[in-house]
Length: 389
Image (tube, rainbow, N blue to C red; front, side, top):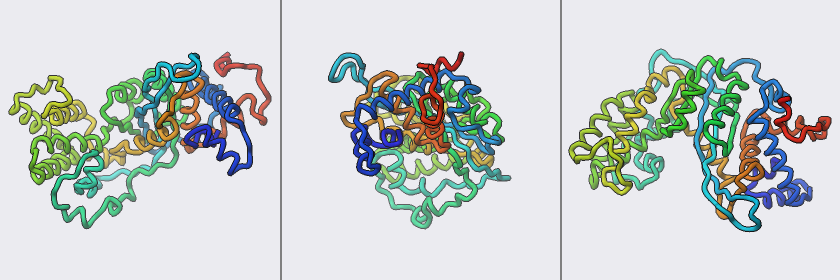
């Protein structure tokens, strides 16, 4: 399971098992076992009550975390419909639902510990990498030359202690139930401090409202940067220095909880161009970046109180979640990689991959205690859902 969940493919897992472990296993055996384990983990995740799942998942922590952070984001994988013989049938992109539950260190402050915009956001080249565009032709500010992000004082920032991961092709509503169960299993609702960082996707905040409303909702600052930068470039087309100065002013205002000063400037520009802020613009419209920034910041203003978050010792970015999605995609997304759109296939490998990326030993625990394990007496149950009875 570790080989197939950590390799790019079952073929690579077979090679690793033989070359590194000296164990010859057929591709059919790897496929069969991964389907069995993945399907069992899926059934357990969806239906088994916590009290019946204790032997199959790591035990709950002895005490609630000082800081509990829940993050969620979507990924993508290409699926096909099974049962139609060889070849691809009804292939389509499917969104994966991914969640991270992190126990973190926690420190609070009497004042904002970092009122000034971090140096990384003062560097034109670094900001261009974040946004995914060409850098503006401006002289690198001295502050960015003298001080890199690695020089910033990070000693009191939240640091991850243990991470638990979930990943599934389930609907957002079903995935929310799974997230809620996992959070309760890890004692997150009882944490002294709780945070829910995320991007602007609507379903993220729907899940927050339904299951995690006691957690502080925080808009990922990196996403705010992307929007204000793109808007500044459009508003000052052909004037790199002016665009950079505009971006720097807005970035600092967002960082300092003054997003209320940014929104009116965006609105004024839209009105000067006779663009209705409530209209839906074509992707090729010249003012779309400004229109999108106005909408994004307006909709998320209540989640952009960054100074207060830093003072409360909470994270202001969901970058670790985006990194986790990349690690999950590394196994399920690639050229000529298609998965059966069913329990046996993509869904199974998502559960196995998430268990491997979790830091609580859950795959070991599951393999050692599941029915059929050499350490556990076999059960006559053919489906984990029968454990409910």
